[in-house]
Length: 133
Ligand code: HEC
Image 1: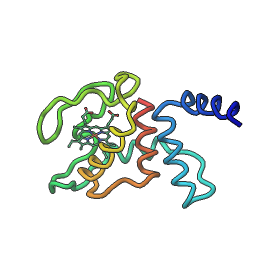
Image 2 (image 1 turned 60 degrees about the horizontal axis):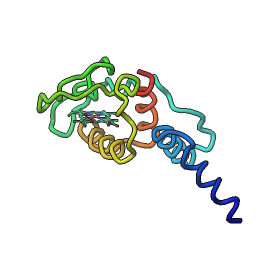
Image 3 (image 1 turned 120 degrees about the vertical axis):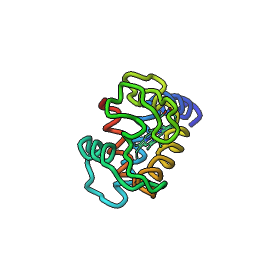
């Protein structure tokens, strides 16, 4: 038994990046509700990212209000005007590499724009969109 356990642990550590595992967890959440769910939808993610809503502070904003339309470029925070580095993980290698950061900011940012937390499906769609950039 011991001999089998160690390779299994090594495999589980080296398999998949943080974001791949994150998306798999979200997918498993969605499947609980919709057993025949297949995959996240980049187009839907784009809509979630770019559409405007009356946010937490009563102003009409979208994710793009802080992260811009071109995710390979940095952009100013809508409220504080502080520079936010590019969100695209293809341009910015630090993006989507820490589960804690992804959790924290998705929760906060969905609240900023939608006044509620994102659903697992919405989070998966929007992350798939961000990763495609
Ligand atoms: C009011 C400004 C603001 C809005 C609106 C906003 N964000 Fe953010 N977002 C930030 C800030 C600030 C950070 C943290 C600083 C940083 O990572 O550069 C951040 C970080 C993130 C991260 C963390 C990425 C990582 O791993 O480093 C993700 C993912 C993200 N935002 C997605 C979204 C999505 C999706 C929306 C729309 C639902 C959104 N953001 C709307 C300001 C905003």
